[in-house]
Structures are given as C-alpha cells and as structure tokens.
Amino acid sequence: MAEKEKLTDKQKGEREELQLDILKDKKLKQFAVAYFGKNESQFGQMGKVSTHMDYSNVMANPSKSVSEVISKSFLYAEQGEMYAGSVTPGELLKNAKDFYFGGLDYLKVSKVLELMGSEISDEVLAEDQKSMYMEDFKAANEEDYKKITWAYKS
Image (cartoon, rainbow, N blue to C red):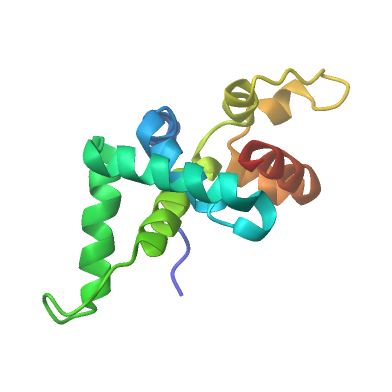
C-alpha cells in the first residue's frame, strides 16, 4: 500500500480554509445537529420536533454545502446502477453530520479551540501543540485529541 502523500504547508492551509467554510455554514450545522436531535430516547419529543423543524427549514432553502450533501447522498445510494438507490431523511442527516465533522482533523488545534470559544492555557496545552493540525495532534497525543473532538461535537 502506498504511503499517504505529504501535503505542503500551503496545501494544508488551503484545506483548512475550505473546512472552516464548511464549519461556518449555519444550515449545514443545523442539518448535522438535527441528526443528534432525532434520538428520542435521549432528547425526548422536543428533540424530535426540533429535528423535524431544522430538517424542514434547511431542505426548503439549502446552502451550497447542504446541496452537496444531498446530491452525494443520492449518487452514493445508486451503487453503480443509476436511479436505483433510495435515500431516507435519516441517511441525509447522518451524511450531513459526517460531512460537517469529517474534516475536523484538517484544522489546527487552535482553530478548533477558537470555534468552541475555548481558551486553554499554555500550561495545559503547549503553544506548539496548539499550532499542530488535528491529524498530527492525534498521532502525538490521542487522549487529548479525543477530549477536544468530543468537546467540539458536544
């Protein structure tokens, strides 16, 4: 198996900017969060109603990212046979969640902390760790990586 191609700092920066645009897309975020709200056993009837409202609002006027999630969901459902697949609302929500959170590793640790509105002292997380991309940080410190990603997704 070939080794993963090493990206330049410029390429990593461009990838980070693209992912930041995705994470700033409020409609995609609504769609992704609706995935979690549909869990009635955890969020009750209010979560179910909220999920339906978010889903309906986003579907009525999707953003570019949401349109991409929807179109890719249908294309992947075909599995080699045109117009043969079906896509459920639950699958759309799951795909939105995966798309929204999927690129978190492409951001610097400091950007993820900034998006959470969190300031962590240098005593807890060194400045050089904060300047690492999450994918590199994961390899260096998996336990703290899991804490940060869990906190971001919560």
